[in-house]
Length: 330
Ligand code: ADP
Ligand code: DP6
Image 1 (cartoon, rainbow, N blue to C red):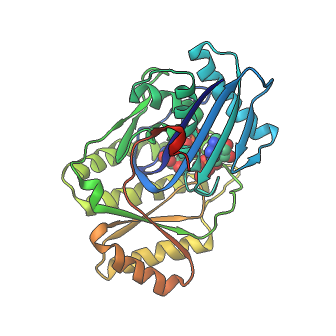
Image 2: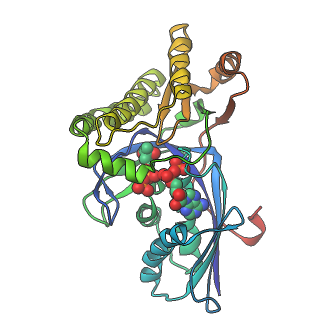
């Protein structure tokens, strides 16, 4: 028996990944840039054993069905190939984040699985190699290998597509991200299916792709200059453009709900009253708001006044993936 455990934190993209050049290898159409967060994470324990004949996948103590297990098995095959291992595995994972609700469980989930399984099989991987591996499970997972800001450099092959850390000299510690969880139910269109549909059918997809390099450069410059306004503006713009592509897909779809729009409008209103804050959204109806940490309390008060009992979760920059020992698992 060979066991390994890991904890990985979610990341939220400020410049979004949306679309794949290669679906099998998960090579993206564009570079993306994210902030890893401390509030949501996954812990995963993997045991490769001679005593079982097929992979078993438990998520939050529930044995998962064959479809969910197949996804995990396919990913484990990549690791088994690398380590020349033919043993089946028991995967026990806990999401301290709602699953498949647009809160990036796939990023923390697949990064934790990559970390735990590679540790179990004694693969000694650099951060870039672990990022490449996590990418094979879910694209956004390759960024969760790092704490703080990360850029996924798209590359054009399995070897050249991975994330790197973006040094920010403490800027990430000046930031907060407030999650407005309007609905934590599982979404209808997964990010995987949604992005594929827009690549294949959306008339707006080319427009999205053309603007990413400029937006990415603006975001990186804003990080170097610790310019919150510039980072917030480009973050919001990137999310709006990404979500714009879904409206022109066939069949069209949107991840926005009436509640999401209410929150986005509220962010604009609060900003127009002089408090700098900017929203972003992923493949689900929940809204994430980027604000300077010094303004976090004021923003929370303003949000609570308007949203009442909406679930608000405050996050700050989170750490890199952690390979755990037995005692460290909660
Ligand atoms: P999200 O917005 O939560 O990232 P996605 O639809 O992109 O939603 O991804 C959700 C999928 O990620 C799940 O259906 C499952 O396949 C995978 N996933 C989530 N958590 C885990 C986990 N802890 N271990 C393995 N796979 C996971
Ligand atoms: C909107 O990484 O979940 O959150 O690579 O198919 O697993 P797959 O997709 P996933 O997509 C994330 C999309 C996004 C934007 C982002 O995180 O960059």
